Image (cartoon, rainbow, N blue to C red; front, side, top):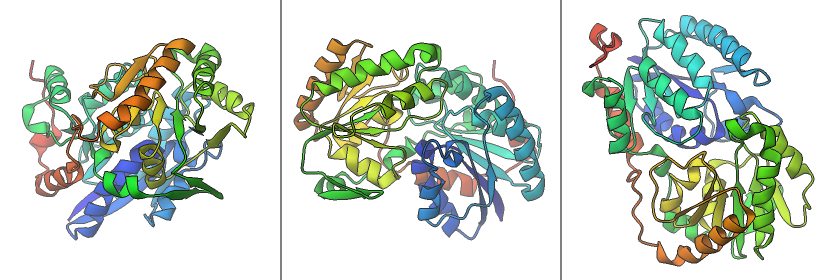
Length: 374
């Protein structure tokens, strides 16, 4: 029996990692435990740990991430996670994505010589500071699960051995059933009922590290462009990258009659809300990865996601009110033209492929001892 520890560190990655969790949980060959950290434990950002509990997933360990000082937060996380490694002694630790919290997990595992570290969504390229984290993670992880051929090639160029890389597609697509989502007429988020028949746009914009000091004014340009659209606006809280407080400060000043604001939305409601919208505006990776499968147009603002591989439903905009507004119009109009669009990021079977690799993999000294190919 393989002892596996899955790390849930953000609402974004949890949404698609739970599919793999469920596959592992059903198999008697795995002894599965979870650790929850990051934004899941932030009351300020909606305590998305509630989504995990709602899904009846057992939470075995919790580690608050002290994000007031990222360096201190990482150090504290290394100490706390190392204790979990010693207590549970997993054969495999699975991480998803590129969040800074994962650096602490990877460092802890790399010096725990009996633990294999598997990285889902490895080799991606976004354009944000997360790229540094992702590439550093690649050198610390033993097994990589990239979504695309280009991501696989980046890992090979990093000097990763070919047998460690498994091309699986993006697991974000595994739980998207467009026909079901498009037929849904109403959803409930908290105490609010939302009619999906009325026209609306969704705004989800995260801070950008290099622009954190003036992100208030940059986010304001997005909102000004959106106010020119005569549709209801739904805004979702950002993650807690540096500069997020400026976005929240602006959100608190908005007219609640014109904007509905949500701190936290569970995965299913998020997919349903976005799928039935006129367009998604902001800089979320969901706008790049999930949106083609949701059959909607997207306005991708700034450079947080501008280096990701993109489908034709995406319109890139600068931090300019006029440019953002023009691209919103294009995104709304393209919706009827992309019903048959094929998502370049995968086919919805990623979690099954990852599960198969984890089930069949033999953990050996050779696998735990990495060599650079150049």
